[in-house]
Length: 179
Image (tube, rainbow, N blue to C red):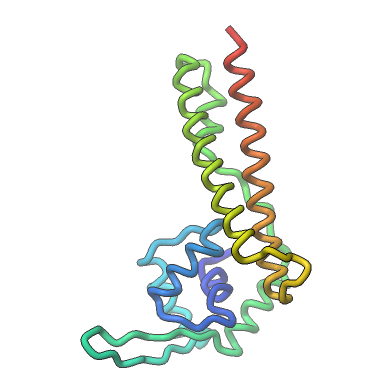
């Protein structure tokens, strides 16, 4: 997937400024696709140049003008064509797993400490997903078609965090019980 697809996905049905796009990005596809402000703004310019987005300049008093980006019909077709293509399975890139692979090189306390830090981070992410579920998806069966697909991505995140936490508990127990 390219950043272009993630940006078009966020803007579909939700025209907004680059600043608002970045905020919306972080609260949606940003949970599984990372991008900096600079990357987003560079990509917006490219997408506009390619005719996949349009931008309307809104004049503001006492503030710089802002541009509201919208997906064009060509942009929507570009996104639809991409969706229709098979997605490759993404490889896992995880520093912690590489460290654990050669964990015999350091005292266990080092890895146990790092596992605990990761456990806390995954607990916090799971709590965030649960708040989003309660706030935006309290009745999954009554969601709009778009909402149902967004809900499914959220469920994937919840399952990922739960599985990671189960593995982490197992790993901590295993390393703690071995001498």
